[in-house]
Every structure is written in structure tokens, then in C-alpha cells.
Image (cartoon, rainbow, N blue to C red; front, side, top):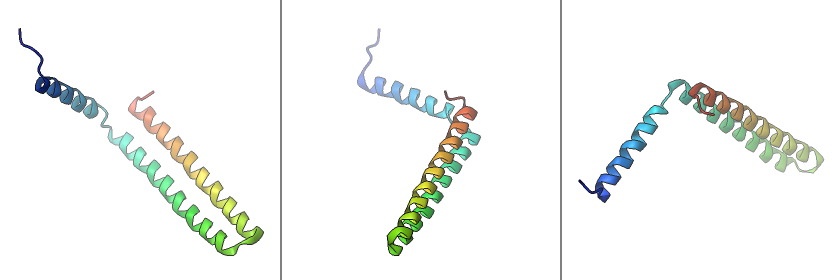
Length: 94
């Protein structure tokens, strides 16, 4: 009977991890996740510009612009979450 040594155990763990990751590779899932990242990054960038503009404006108008920026950021996050949920459905993840 052979003993399980550390190198053998490491090889088994690496093989299991590799197989697990290979099973998760779904091109449609990957594309949807990239789209979600793009949506969130785009809304963040637009919101950052709006916030900067609001800070420059100052006063009540500036605060209103900053509030709109926060709403835009939240809408982008919500849409990205929705797309990620769809990606999970496509990939068969619960």
C-alpha cells in the first residue's frame, strides 16, 4: 500500500481544481460577465464625471447633480447584477 505524500496530495488537489475550473468555462457566461463589467465600469465613469461637475458647481444645483450621479451609479450596478444573474442562469449556477 502506498502512502499519500505531500507531493501526491498536491497533485491530486491541483488536478481537481483544474477540472473544476475547466467545467466552468462557458463562452456565453463569460461574454455576459464581461458585459456586466462593462456596464458597471461605464456607469461608474459617467457618475464620477457627474460628481466632479457637481462639486465644481456647488450649491443646491451641484448637490442635485451629485444625487443624479449616485442614482446613475446605482442603476448601473443594478443592471450589472441583473446581467450577472442571467450569466449564472446560462452557466447553470444556482
